[in-house]
Image (cartoon, rainbow, N blue to C red; front, side, top):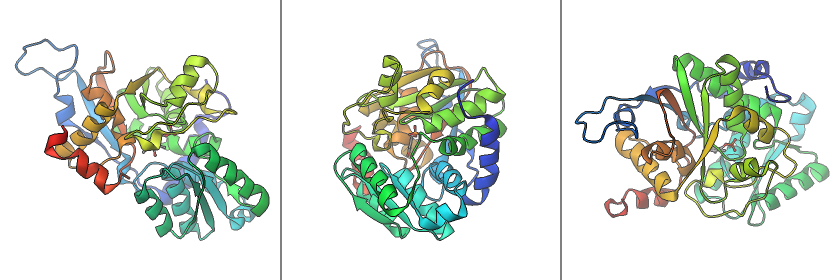
Length: 338
Ligand SMILES: *Cc1c(COP(=O)(O)O)cnc(C)c1O
């Protein structure tokens, strides 16, 4: 079992964050389940489904992404005194939005440090919560460095985006819900960046059902966790433009929790092309009438492009968020672009 964190902390988190989150549904996807899988015979008229796919709809959270779970758990475990001084974070967007949202609900100050490359829609959403935004530099690293300066100089408590026991436990509550929603779960497909989500979900699921297959999905370019697993230690990656902007950024060279947890809990990591991500987004719109962001479409993209071998049984795909700029989604849905 992984270091430091137990499933007990995930159960505690579930109770603590209850008033701040929605228990999201895991809906059966008929259209995805009916697609021919790699193993089905060529030429078969109506291939019988080999998988039942369920979509865990975290895009339905108030802030449009699952990150409210980890942020709420981390902020609610601070002391009264710490909370009163306010919280700060650095983020590609959804975590910043989550921290700002929870701070607003608690009536405490929040500062969100972001880089220049964060999509405007996310910046606007953060500003609407009343949080203060400071735009610094062109990478996650620069925003992070600045944020710790704020902690030193102005007394804010830094809420880390993924490499934190309380954040991981909060994200893990998705795994507890899945246990109830999808009986006899065989596999779960999880968009993967810093690894807080997959570490928590993996912990919650494997503590209860050690045989559940945990599959991470990242984009081909700049997959920090994938590269770090290959190397056996945290490595820095070059950040590249991608439709899955929420998956950008490193895992932190001083990584404490998520690398070790991914090493022990995750069965495999697959990498998806930009085309697969785009196909996943289009599929979610056309088949389910849902706008989801690139990061959230990586799991569906991986299935559509048949990148995960030997999938069988009941498979949950985490649909992690819906925060995408209008123009990006409109362009993707142009008939000429598929
Ligand atoms: C943060 C995020 C992820 C990845 O979560 P990690 O804990 O960093 O691995 C996936 N999808 C969306 C929409 C996110 O915001």
